[in-house]
Length: 77
Image (cartoon, rainbow, N blue to C red; front, side, top):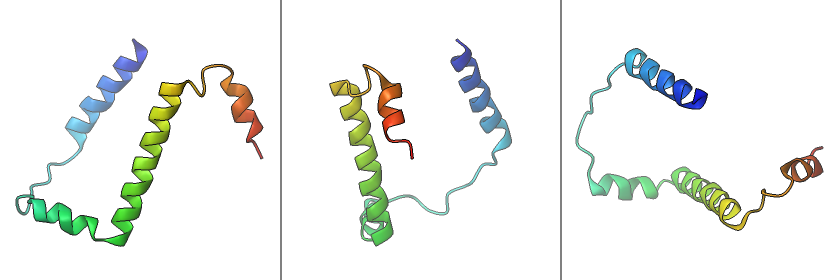
């Protein structure tokens, strides 16, 4: 319940505080194709896809369901 209240408060604050930014032009399919040809954009797409896949794998196969504290502490420097 508290998380829902915090999420709603954040949404309302963003809605009230952030300015509207009008679009300069319509987004076309060729804009997405051009975006993929940028090397840094490709790296970020691959990183986001990797994190998403790791998250889904961890949730699906129960990687952190037993003792997450032991797993986390094992990787502590």
